[in-house]
Amino acid sequence: MNNNERPLYMTDQQHVSIKNNLYHAIKRNDLEKVRKMIRLFQIEPGEEISTFGNQWTPIHYAIFFKSSKILEFLIQLTYLKNKNNIEKYIQIMNMPTKSGHSPLMVGAVYDTVDCLKILFQYGGLQLFKKDCSAMDCIKLAIKYDSKDANDFIQDKIAQNNFQEFLEVNLDAFKQVPDLKTLLHQRYEVQMPEELVLQNRDILLYGEPISCIICLQNTGFLKYSNCCGQPLHQHCHAEKIIQCPLCKSNNFYLISEVLHPNRAFTFNPNSDYIKVQQDNTQNKQENNLQQTQLNSQQNGLIQHLTNPQQDENSENQQLQLKENINCKLNTVNKDESSNNINKDESSNSINKDESSNNLDKDESGQACNIINKENQINNKNQ
Image (tube, rainbow, N blue to C red):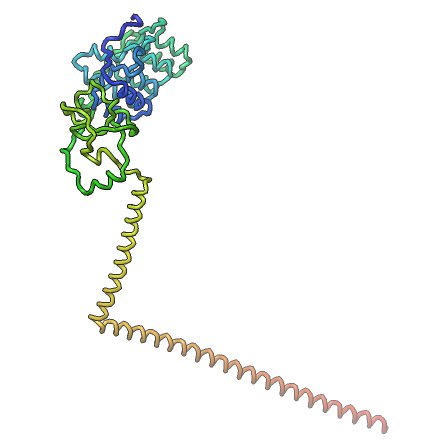
């Protein structure tokens, strides 16, 4: 294919800001944002979202950034939009870039095996397609040292009996929901409500919500006349003749804020939120104090209305104290009697010891007298 020739079914319908936001959503692996943008702006799977002429589609970028979930979503979307024209599905799944690289070749160059698995799962691949340098996916994997991708691709080609084309796996698409479910239901917009008192705070203290296209809240924001969504004037392309959200055909931008909750939001770290949190905490503390005060008042009322119950409780407490005192007195008496017995026994022991000492003294004196008498008798003799 000539380098200047654009691939069949490659489109260029979207504003550059929409393309840039879709590119960054794929880069961040933000599936929900990709889904929302494709639903709101009706982006085709074959839309060129790179710089014009490089011919990179969302499918190429999903493989490049290893966003496997987004890749699977895009493949399912491509099939559902073209299930009555399988040839178009095959063309998009093998759409070449400026260098002639199909999505399969991008996976081979950047060694994104998880994405390659998804490509082979759904099929419709031209396995030996060549780029502008006459290199196929296997040669590219070898050139860029993508060992895992090379091994995986060669195994799959062998399983396909080295055929040039891998058929579309229709059984795999049987598990895919319908197009409306895949994209989710269209965003429903409520009827515009009047500015009421509860919107006063968000208008005074809120911060602007970002533009729905460039996702920036800087600069001068305007709002859609139909559903009040924020949008920059320079982001509003002439191609957009229908509101991206509510699908109103009579779509233009105004400076009036119709829906404060869609134009402004509260910053969680703002002083206003901190004051509101403090007020909430003070209310909780006041409620707790009021609850305690009410319980005390209820107790006083109960005492006044039923004093007999309080007297009975006081009598029970007095009786309990008397029982405790009686037990303490009994214990003290037992201890004192034990002490008296101990004293008496110690006195009797002392008396016995003193009497024994007297007996010892008397016997000693008698022995001395006898000795003296014996000495006198010996002298006389």
